[in-house]
Image (cartoon, rainbow, N blue to C red; front, side):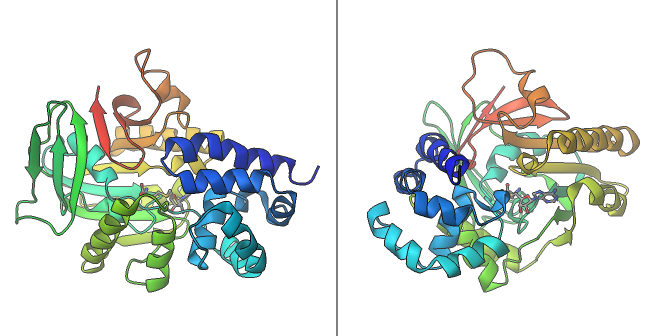
Length: 326
Ligand SMILES: C[S@@+](CC[C@H](N)C(=O)[O-])C[C@H]1O[C@@H](n2cnc3c(N)ncnc32)[C@H](O)[C@@H]1O
Protein backbone atom coordinates (compact mmCIF):
# COMPACT_ATOMS: atom_id res chain seq x y z
CA UNK A 1 0.00 0.00 0.00
CA UNK A 2 1.23 3.52 -0.77
CA UNK A 3 3.27 5.02 2.04
CA UNK A 4 3.53 1.89 4.22
CA UNK A 5 7.25 1.37 3.57
CA UNK A 6 7.93 5.09 3.84
CA UNK A 7 5.89 5.36 7.06
CA UNK A 8 7.83 2.44 8.55
CA UNK A 9 11.15 4.00 7.53
CA UNK A 10 10.27 7.29 9.21
CA UNK A 11 8.95 5.51 12.32
CA UNK A 12 12.20 3.52 12.48
CA UNK A 13 14.29 6.67 12.05
CA UNK A 14 12.37 8.39 14.87
CA UNK A 15 13.02 5.60 17.35
CA UNK A 16 16.62 4.87 16.38
CA UNK A 17 18.77 7.52 14.66
CA UNK A 18 16.84 10.58 15.91
CA UNK A 19 16.54 9.20 19.43
CA UNK A 20 20.15 8.01 19.68
CA UNK A 21 21.49 10.97 17.74
CA UNK A 22 20.01 13.52 20.14
CA UNK A 23 17.45 15.27 17.97
CA UNK A 24 14.02 15.57 19.61
CA UNK A 25 13.05 17.85 16.71
CA UNK A 26 13.74 15.20 14.06
CA UNK A 27 12.17 12.54 16.25
CA UNK A 28 8.98 14.61 16.41
CA UNK A 29 9.07 15.31 12.66
CA UNK A 30 9.74 11.69 11.75
CA UNK A 31 6.92 10.46 13.96
CA UNK A 32 4.72 13.09 12.34
CA UNK A 33 5.56 11.96 8.80
CA UNK A 34 5.12 8.29 9.76
CA UNK A 35 1.56 9.00 10.88
CA UNK A 36 0.73 11.22 7.88
CA UNK A 37 -0.57 9.39 4.77
CA UNK A 38 -0.64 12.64 2.75
CA UNK A 39 3.07 13.33 3.33
CA UNK A 40 3.99 9.69 2.75
CA UNK A 41 2.12 9.72 -0.56
CA UNK A 42 4.09 12.82 -1.64
CA UNK A 43 7.37 11.14 -0.63
CA UNK A 44 6.38 8.06 -2.61
CA UNK A 45 6.39 10.10 -5.82
CA UNK A 46 10.21 10.26 -5.38
CA UNK A 47 12.61 7.43 -6.24
CA UNK A 48 13.16 5.19 -3.20
CA UNK A 49 16.70 6.44 -2.37
CA UNK A 50 15.32 10.00 -2.25
CA UNK A 51 12.77 9.30 0.49
CA UNK A 52 15.23 9.34 3.38
CA UNK A 53 14.23 11.24 6.53
CA UNK A 54 17.62 12.99 6.66
CA UNK A 55 17.22 14.20 3.09
CA UNK A 56 13.65 15.43 3.60
CA UNK A 57 14.47 17.31 6.79
CA UNK A 58 17.67 18.90 5.47
CA UNK A 59 15.88 19.89 2.25
CA UNK A 60 13.04 21.43 4.23
CA UNK A 61 15.44 23.42 6.39
CA UNK A 62 17.42 24.56 3.33
CA UNK A 63 14.14 25.79 1.87
CA UNK A 64 13.40 27.72 5.09
CA UNK A 65 11.27 25.40 7.23
CA UNK A 66 10.68 26.54 10.82
CA UNK A 67 12.47 24.27 13.31
CA UNK A 68 9.40 24.07 15.54
CA UNK A 69 7.06 21.20 16.28
CA UNK A 70 5.68 18.92 13.59
CA UNK A 71 2.31 20.69 14.00
CA UNK A 72 4.01 23.93 12.84
CA UNK A 73 6.14 22.33 10.15
CA UNK A 74 3.45 20.21 8.48
CA UNK A 75 1.42 23.06 6.90
CA UNK A 76 4.66 24.81 5.88
CA UNK A 77 5.92 21.62 4.24
CA UNK A 78 2.72 20.99 2.30
CA UNK A 79 2.71 24.57 0.99
CA UNK A 80 6.43 24.49 0.10
CA UNK A 81 6.44 20.92 -1.27
CA UNK A 82 7.48 21.78 -4.87
CA UNK A 83 10.56 23.62 -3.60
CA UNK A 84 11.44 20.91 -1.05
CA UNK A 85 10.90 18.18 -3.63
CA UNK A 86 13.29 19.91 -6.04
CA UNK A 87 16.01 20.00 -3.37
CA UNK A 88 15.41 16.31 -2.62
CA UNK A 89 15.72 15.41 -6.29
CA UNK A 90 18.93 17.40 -6.81
CA UNK A 91 20.84 16.84 -3.55
CA UNK A 92 22.09 13.82 -1.59
CA UNK A 93 23.01 13.41 2.07
CA UNK A 94 26.66 14.43 2.25
CA UNK A 95 27.19 15.42 5.85
CA UNK A 96 30.85 16.33 6.29
CA UNK A 97 32.01 16.17 9.90
CA UNK A 98 35.61 17.40 10.45
CA UNK A 99 35.48 16.27 14.07
CA UNK A 100 35.82 12.69 12.84
CA UNK A 101 39.51 13.60 12.39
CA UNK A 102 39.81 13.57 16.19
CA UNK A 103 38.78 9.92 16.28
CA UNK A 104 41.01 8.93 13.34
CA UNK A 105 44.03 10.78 14.72
CA UNK A 106 45.26 8.22 17.29
CA UNK A 107 45.72 5.67 14.51
CA UNK A 108 46.77 8.08 11.78
CA UNK A 109 49.40 9.80 13.92
CA UNK A 110 51.00 6.44 14.71
CA UNK A 111 51.97 6.03 11.05
CA UNK A 112 55.60 7.09 10.63
CA UNK A 113 56.91 9.34 7.92
CA UNK A 114 55.15 11.22 5.15
CA UNK A 115 51.54 10.28 4.50
CA UNK A 116 49.57 10.57 1.25
CA UNK A 117 46.00 10.79 2.51
CA UNK A 118 43.13 9.73 0.27
CA UNK A 119 39.50 9.83 1.35
CA UNK A 120 36.80 7.92 -0.49
CA UNK A 121 33.35 9.48 -0.08
CA UNK A 122 35.02 12.75 0.89
CA UNK A 123 32.04 15.12 0.47
CA UNK A 124 33.76 18.56 0.71
CA UNK A 125 37.03 17.06 1.96
CA UNK A 126 36.94 18.45 5.51
CA UNK A 127 38.30 15.16 6.89
CA UNK A 128 41.37 15.44 4.68
CA UNK A 129 43.04 18.01 6.97
CA UNK A 130 43.86 16.13 10.21
CA UNK A 131 47.27 17.81 10.24
CA UNK A 132 45.81 21.34 10.14
CA UNK A 133 43.39 21.12 13.08
CA UNK A 134 44.01 21.49 16.81
CA UNK A 135 42.61 18.86 19.19
CA UNK A 136 41.38 18.99 22.77
CA UNK A 137 41.24 15.48 24.22
CA UNK A 138 39.54 14.74 27.53
CA UNK A 139 40.48 11.50 29.29
CA UNK A 140 38.11 9.56 31.59
CA UNK A 141 39.81 11.08 34.69
CA UNK A 142 38.97 14.58 33.39
CA UNK A 143 42.53 15.30 32.27
CA UNK A 144 42.72 17.50 29.17
CA UNK A 145 45.41 17.43 26.51
CA UNK A 146 45.70 19.95 23.71
CA UNK A 147 47.49 19.05 20.52
CA UNK A 148 48.37 21.64 17.88
CA UNK A 149 49.90 21.39 14.40
CA UNK A 150 53.69 21.98 14.31
CA UNK A 151 53.23 25.54 12.99
CA UNK A 152 50.96 26.56 15.87
CA UNK A 153 47.34 26.50 17.05
CA UNK A 154 44.69 26.06 14.39
CA UNK A 155 41.57 28.19 13.99
CA UNK A 156 39.70 24.85 14.20
CA UNK A 157 39.75 23.14 17.60
CA UNK A 158 38.20 19.69 17.77
CA UNK A 159 37.16 18.54 21.26
CA UNK A 160 36.98 14.78 21.78
CA UNK A 161 36.62 12.42 24.74
CA UNK A 162 39.25 9.70 24.58
CA UNK A 163 39.74 6.35 26.29
CA UNK A 164 43.26 5.13 25.64
CA UNK A 165 46.59 6.76 24.78
CA UNK A 166 46.29 10.38 23.68
CA UNK A 167 48.12 11.12 20.42
CA UNK A 168 51.21 13.27 20.80
CA UNK A 169 51.62 14.46 17.20
CA UNK A 170 49.59 15.18 14.10
CA UNK A 171 50.40 13.15 10.99
CA UNK A 172 52.84 14.42 8.40
CA UNK A 173 50.41 14.73 5.47
CA UNK A 174 52.41 15.65 2.36
CA UNK A 175 49.66 15.03 -0.22
CA UNK A 176 45.89 14.74 -0.01
CA UNK A 177 43.06 13.93 -2.38
CA UNK A 178 39.49 12.71 -2.26
CA UNK A 179 36.92 11.04 -4.44
CA UNK A 180 33.17 11.47 -4.28
CA UNK A 181 30.17 10.85 -6.53
CA UNK A 182 29.39 14.53 -6.16
CA UNK A 183 32.11 16.53 -4.38
CA UNK A 184 31.06 19.68 -2.57
CA UNK A 185 33.10 22.89 -2.66
CA UNK A 186 33.31 24.83 0.59
CA UNK A 187 34.03 27.99 -1.41
CA UNK A 188 30.56 27.78 -3.01
CA UNK A 189 27.92 29.40 -0.77
CA UNK A 190 25.23 26.97 -2.00
CA UNK A 191 27.36 23.95 -1.07
CA UNK A 192 28.16 25.38 2.34
CA UNK A 193 24.47 26.12 2.94
CA UNK A 194 23.67 22.48 2.11
CA UNK A 195 26.38 21.22 4.49
CA UNK A 196 24.89 23.41 7.24
CA UNK A 197 21.34 22.20 6.52
CA UNK A 198 22.58 18.62 6.95
CA UNK A 199 23.61 19.29 10.56
CA UNK A 200 20.77 18.33 12.88
CA UNK A 201 19.05 21.29 14.55
CA UNK A 202 20.16 20.58 18.12
CA UNK A 203 23.82 20.06 17.15
CA UNK A 204 24.66 23.75 17.27
CA UNK A 205 28.27 23.10 18.29
CA UNK A 206 28.81 21.29 14.98
CA UNK A 207 27.84 24.36 12.94
CA UNK A 208 30.67 26.47 14.42
CA UNK A 209 33.18 23.69 13.74
CA UNK A 210 31.87 23.21 10.21
CA UNK A 211 32.19 26.92 9.39
CA UNK A 212 35.68 27.17 10.87
CA UNK A 213 36.87 24.06 9.02
CA UNK A 214 35.30 25.26 5.76
CA UNK A 215 37.12 28.60 6.16
CA UNK A 216 40.44 26.81 6.72
CA UNK A 217 39.95 24.40 3.81
CA UNK A 218 38.80 27.16 1.45
CA UNK A 219 42.27 28.71 1.72
CA UNK A 220 43.93 25.55 0.37
CA UNK A 221 41.19 23.43 -1.22
CA UNK A 222 41.77 19.73 -1.70
CA UNK A 223 41.97 17.84 -4.97
CA UNK A 224 38.53 16.19 -5.18
CA UNK A 225 37.81 13.81 -8.03
CA UNK A 226 34.25 13.21 -9.18
CA UNK A 227 33.64 9.50 -9.45
CA UNK A 228 32.65 6.22 -7.87
CA UNK A 229 35.01 5.05 -5.16
CA UNK A 230 34.83 1.54 -6.62
CA UNK A 231 36.39 2.73 -9.88
CA UNK A 232 38.51 5.78 -9.17
CA UNK A 233 40.71 4.76 -6.25
CA UNK A 234 43.59 2.98 -8.07
CA UNK A 235 44.27 6.05 -10.25
CA UNK A 236 44.41 8.30 -7.19
CA UNK A 237 46.76 5.91 -5.41
CA UNK A 238 48.99 5.84 -8.50
CA UNK A 239 49.17 9.65 -8.40
CA UNK A 240 50.36 9.76 -4.78
CA UNK A 241 54.06 10.53 -4.13
CA UNK A 242 56.09 7.30 -4.23
CA UNK A 243 57.96 8.01 -0.99
CA UNK A 244 54.81 8.53 1.10
CA UNK A 245 52.71 5.91 2.88
CA UNK A 246 49.32 5.87 1.19
CA UNK A 247 46.48 5.95 3.71
CA UNK A 248 42.98 5.45 2.35
CA UNK A 249 40.23 6.47 4.74
CA UNK A 250 36.48 6.23 4.61
CA UNK A 251 34.00 7.47 7.19
CA UNK A 252 30.22 7.22 6.93
CA UNK A 253 30.62 6.43 3.24
CA UNK A 254 30.58 2.65 2.72
CA UNK A 255 27.04 2.64 4.14
CA UNK A 256 25.92 3.77 0.68
CA UNK A 257 27.33 0.69 -1.05
CA UNK A 258 25.63 -2.65 -1.67
CA UNK A 259 27.05 -5.75 0.02
CA UNK A 260 28.77 -6.62 -3.27
CA UNK A 261 30.18 -3.09 -3.50
CA UNK A 262 31.58 -3.28 0.03
CA UNK A 263 33.20 -6.64 -0.72
CA UNK A 264 34.70 -5.24 -3.94
CA UNK A 265 36.09 -2.25 -2.04
CA UNK A 266 37.62 -4.50 0.63
CA UNK A 267 39.25 -6.54 -2.17
CA UNK A 268 40.59 -3.36 -3.78
CA UNK A 269 42.11 -2.31 -0.46
CA UNK A 270 43.67 -5.74 0.08
CA UNK A 271 45.24 -5.47 -3.38
CA UNK A 272 46.54 -1.93 -2.74
CA UNK A 273 48.00 -3.11 0.55
CA UNK A 274 49.93 -5.87 -1.23
CA UNK A 275 51.08 -3.82 -4.22
CA UNK A 276 51.59 -0.37 -2.65
CA UNK A 277 51.68 -0.93 1.11
CA UNK A 278 48.52 1.17 1.41
CA UNK A 279 46.91 1.41 4.85
CA UNK A 280 43.09 1.27 5.05
CA UNK A 281 41.34 3.19 7.82
CA UNK A 282 37.61 2.61 7.91
CA UNK A 283 35.23 4.44 10.26
CA UNK A 284 31.72 3.17 9.69
CA UNK A 285 28.53 2.26 11.52
CA UNK A 286 28.46 -1.02 13.41
CA UNK A 287 26.43 -2.89 10.80
CA UNK A 288 28.19 -1.58 7.67
CA UNK A 289 31.07 -4.06 7.51
CA UNK A 290 29.89 -7.30 9.17
CA UNK A 291 33.32 -8.94 8.78
CA UNK A 292 34.87 -6.13 10.82
CA UNK A 293 32.12 -6.21 13.46
CA UNK A 294 32.57 -9.99 13.79
CA UNK A 295 36.15 -9.39 14.99
CA UNK A 296 35.08 -7.21 17.93
CA UNK A 297 35.25 -8.51 21.50
CA UNK A 298 31.82 -9.47 22.91
CA UNK A 299 29.72 -7.08 24.95
CA UNK A 300 30.56 -3.73 23.36
CA UNK A 301 27.79 -1.19 22.74
CA UNK A 302 27.18 -0.46 19.03
CA UNK A 303 28.75 2.73 17.75
CA UNK A 304 30.99 3.42 14.77
CA UNK A 305 33.91 1.02 14.38
CA UNK A 306 37.33 2.32 13.40
CA UNK A 307 39.29 -0.44 11.69
CA UNK A 308 42.83 -0.57 10.35
CA UNK A 309 43.18 -2.99 7.44
CA UNK A 310 39.94 -4.69 8.49
CA UNK A 311 40.84 -5.13 12.18
CA UNK A 312 38.82 -3.10 14.72
CA UNK A 313 41.07 -0.65 16.58
CA UNK A 314 38.56 1.72 18.21
CA UNK A 315 34.92 2.49 18.82
CA UNK A 316 33.99 6.02 17.82
CA UNK A 317 31.06 8.38 18.20
CA UNK A 318 29.40 8.86 14.78
CA UNK A 319 30.10 12.59 14.84
CA UNK A 320 33.59 12.37 16.31
CA UNK A 321 32.73 13.35 19.88
CA UNK A 322 34.53 10.38 21.43
CA UNK A 323 36.96 7.57 20.70
CA UNK A 324 37.60 4.44 22.72
CA UNK A 325 40.75 2.67 21.64
CA UNK A 326 40.57 -1.11 21.83
C1 LIG B 1 27.83 11.02 4.83
S1 LIG B 1 29.02 11.64 3.68
C2 LIG B 1 30.50 11.47 4.66
C3 LIG B 1 31.56 12.47 4.27
C4 LIG B 1 32.89 12.35 4.99
N1 LIG B 1 33.50 11.06 4.73
C5 LIG B 1 32.75 12.55 6.48
O1 LIG B 1 32.97 11.59 7.22
O2 LIG B 1 32.46 13.65 6.93
C6 LIG B 1 29.16 10.30 2.52
C7 LIG B 1 29.76 10.71 1.20
O3 LIG B 1 30.00 9.53 0.44
C8 LIG B 1 29.73 9.83 -0.92
N2 LIG B 1 29.48 8.56 -1.63
C9 LIG B 1 28.48 7.68 -1.46
N3 LIG B 1 28.62 6.64 -2.30
C10 LIG B 1 29.74 6.86 -3.03
C11 LIG B 1 30.41 6.14 -4.06
N4 LIG B 1 29.95 5.00 -4.52
N5 LIG B 1 31.54 6.67 -4.58
C12 LIG B 1 32.03 7.86 -4.14
N6 LIG B 1 31.42 8.58 -3.15
C13 LIG B 1 30.30 8.09 -2.59
C14 LIG B 1 28.52 10.74 -0.86
O4 LIG B 1 28.39 11.51 -2.05
C15 LIG B 1 28.85 11.59 0.37
O5 LIG B 1 29.52 12.78 0.02
